[in-house]
Image (tube, rainbow, N blue to C red; front, side):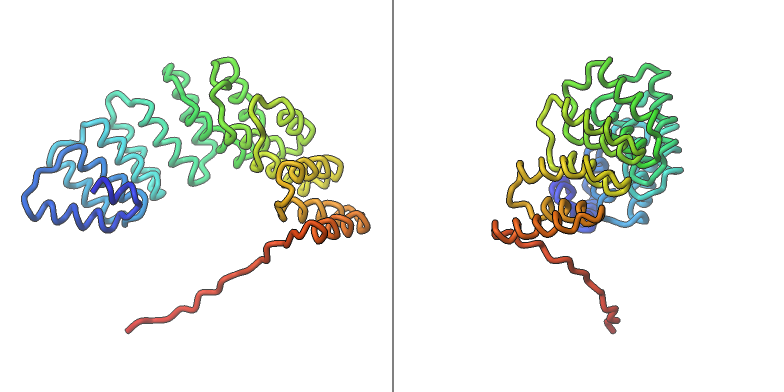
Length: 280
């Protein structure tokens, strides 16, 4: 069951769980933990409720690891109210409990609720980790909570978490600043990063440049992308689009010619239309 869960094969894991029950094998908190993980990723919510009922029947509902699994399962399925109800029953929530609840809110667009939960953690002196900050920064970015997001990024600095910050954290903050139109601040942050900026960071800023029509920074960003990844067609295409979007058709043509000279081919766009076929 644990192996199938790790592979994301939730339906098969559930069938193995049923087989285990039919043979009278005992289930424990580890079994339930694996099952809840499997259901959260690929099985149906109905199966999750059945496992929850069995947890109540067998008396494991007070185990914090099982409770965390329930929070995560309901949160992943978008049943935020039920996730919150389980969380409220946890006598001593650990960091996994808090992060599981935050993940549910963040994944389903509840940015303000993420902030509320994080502030509750701070009031209770619950020490966050880099995963917590990533969830909070992502939620702030998507909800347009620029000042709050920057406050939390600064909190990472003062609490010593910035040393362990990953590329995803910086991408979130660049995206946060970019969405709000603070393009120069976003570029300055990239230039001051203690780790090497990756493609995701540059593309977050480039996307903001296109939204806000800042050709100057867009050119610098795409030029840097091309320096780092000279055979990446998307960087060349973005630079060409940046020039064309500002009416610099000659420059756009030069970029396309440079692509041809390097033998770089633009990846074709494609779409897929599903034909609904009923199987009798």
